[in-house]
Image (cartoon, rainbow, N blue to C red; front, side, top):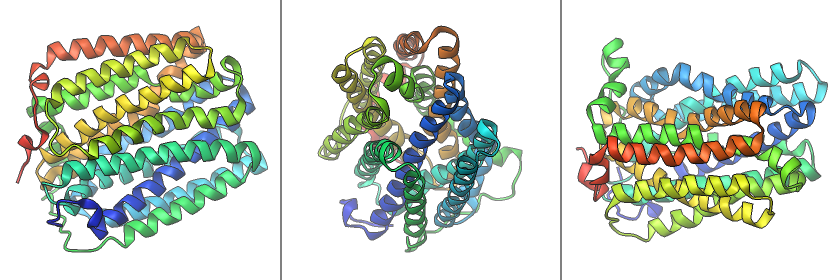
Length: 407
């Protein structure tokens, strides 16, 4: 483990950033391309929701196995192998789309494979990060890592929109390159990284992450409020409808819209790296979620492109604050021997709940329309934030995140 306080000087951390950023770029370019092609194929908002569900369902089904794997096997190897499965999924998607085989059901089936690989990749990626840097450097490492991920969310959707609009199939070739880079980056991480055995596999061991989260009420509150906020406040899955039918900006506009949360997140993430020891993190979490919900309400009602982009930028910045607090607190408070299983539980709320939120939004939009679906989600997010502030008062009193550090 590095003893340096500046994680950007650590080779392994930089390789981790490369692997995670390239993987995220590939995922976001692929999501834009597939969403647009499915929307053009069926014009059914429910199909956009199914895209999210196809990626969430395998995560929910296998996240316990993903956590156990991250606590028993080489986390670097898991990350690399996952990118191989991503490459297989992209190749299958190209075959289906180019040859018109199977239609939407075939696409969704391939996305299940893609979602399964994402479950293992994100769990191993979260679990390995505390092994790469010192405890003192960890909060900054989270900020840098989250900023890199958000930069991918900025560049990935924008590049995906441009490629879909102007280069068509090259979007998928670009995704292939990104997953190759991610796999190589993960494999070349080295050093004395010891993965501790989780002991004999049994039900108690398998559910160890749940037990730990349930026993630690601050961690429980942080994980659960993210799950609820993203589930109710998801808007990204409906952006093709806003680009096509509400704001009338086409595929190019879709790419820009998907990028704007990344702009806000990146700027906020870079600001967080400049804060040596942030204070009042519990209050900051609830304030950021309130801003998050408000931005959704504004976006839902906007019919002006620049205002929609501004709302999405604030949406991303607010989400970055809550992601930073959640990731730092959960990882720094968890013993390394069970970090994979706790990361698996946490990743359901951080990553997979985005797809479930997209499904919720798509399902609601199929019945009441896109604008009411997003508006209701924003209002519900504000209500959940207020409710959780009352249910988990200890969360409001959290000050410094490193107060929760475990040896």
